Length: 216
Length: 216
Image 1 (cartoon, rainbow over the protein chains, first blue to last red):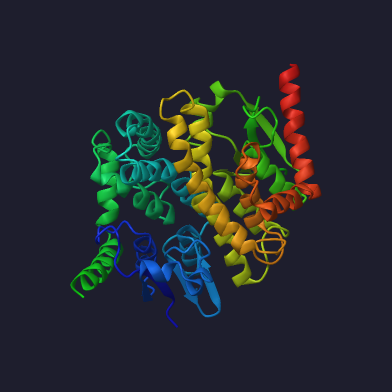
Image 2: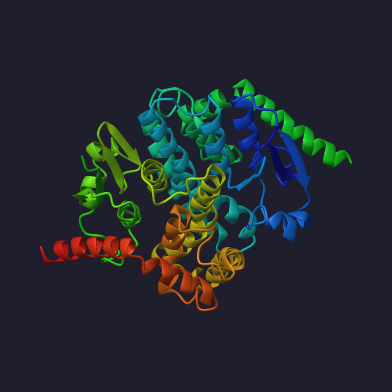
């Protein structure tokens, strides 16, 4: 039986692949696991029937058999733990890949989401221009660490892993800013990940879903 | 062989238990695994020898045998996967507990860290008072979800798990604000967790370390 994920009926990012279902689609494509998608309107997301799956009323969720999961990171860890292709087989290498998964979501993403929130929710506020350098400084501090650590390596720790999948997904959001301009190796890292056939299929699938909703 | 964790030589929270080593100490106490601690000054945290363990130059790290890990969430997941007491044995219940671990760190903590950052880094800024309601609104949205989900239950999903450990650790930071005043069930949830002998031992250990450094 295929797992079922949820996604936005009409993604607010207009099909740019930044909604979190893309991360789960990508993981499922990496392990070559077919999946079904249930699309939800913004209204449906906040209804009790969806909150029973995800108390935060967000996408994605992941259902397989009796199991219902939420949180992208947890879902991808589950997929990586039940299929080959996303986490190393060797115990210590696997633990390090999981360190990078959490690093992406807890040490890097918050600064980037703060930037995104400010650009959406605080753009009209009188402090927007003054506060932006502070936010950008926090983002650059993370990018400095990543660029330093990556050096000339292909991936964060040996082979491509779910740690890279999440880290790339997190920093992709900066492509609409100029913050990556001084980090050519990070731009190349993102491009390398986006060239993976699994990412290409995931991106195409979410874009097709957006286009279908936009034309409906 | 005991694992070794790292912690602040002198915690900036003055022993209130908010530094992230407390979370790992707590997890180790729950599974009754003795551990050693290596204490680091702020200068030592940023040195190459520590960045080789944690590229972000932060505490805690976790070393056992050949394995070196960073990221509190990953470390606690590792501890929970290798010892009984932090994650349910049943596969689906375990997956749901892991959903709550990620929820604590990725869906709840960023809004709370944003509040903490603003109180530290933006207090002197002209926009501080105006921006605060926006930040608090984001925090309350998470607390509403948690309080709703928890209802009259003891823990987030069945027995106490690493999901509760992380969620309580994340919302504990709000005890210095008045944001929890309208959430008596969340205050009780925190108190219930803090009453656990494992938390008590972890808290006492970090406080003793702070007091030793303060008296040095």
